[in-house]
Every structure is written in C-alpha cells, then in structure tokens.
Image (cartoon, rainbow, N blue to C red):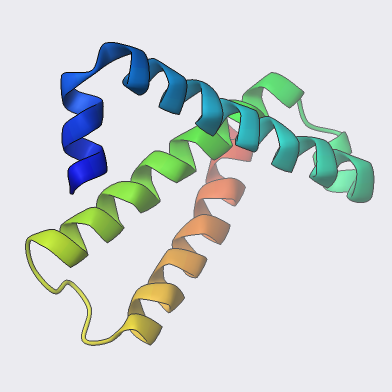
Length: 96
C-alpha cells in the first residue's frame, strides 16, 4: 500500500516504476524469443506491450485481493487463477 501511495504522489517514482516494468518485460520477451519458435515469430514490441498489460492486470487483482476483499478462498486459488489468466492473456493478445 505504501508503494502505491508513493507512486501516486511522486511522478518521477511512477515513471521509474513504469520503465522498470517495461525493462523486465523486455527481458522476458528476449528470453522467450531465444527459446521458443512461437515467440520468435511474434513482433517484439507487441510482446513487450502484452507483458506490460499482463503485469498491470495481475497487479490490480493481487492488490484488490489483499487490500479490499478476499477474492479467493486461499493463496492456491489465487495462484491458480493468475496462472490461468496469464496463459489465456498471452494466447489472446497474440491473436489480435
């Protein structure tokens, strides 16, 4: 919660966080494109945007679950949901 508040009140911190998310996503895409024919055949910039999008969705779900209400009965259910959401989102974003 403190980090989210800090980001909302400090524009330079918010920008640094955004840049770090893109940097991490770029690293993930690089590794996937080196090891997977499927990812090699996809546009790098689009894949990076997809992973940034996924990060934001997962971050919102986890934040809401931990701060506002229990969306899942236990952590295993949360992990299962996030894993399935990640797989579905990658598949969906690559079609469009």
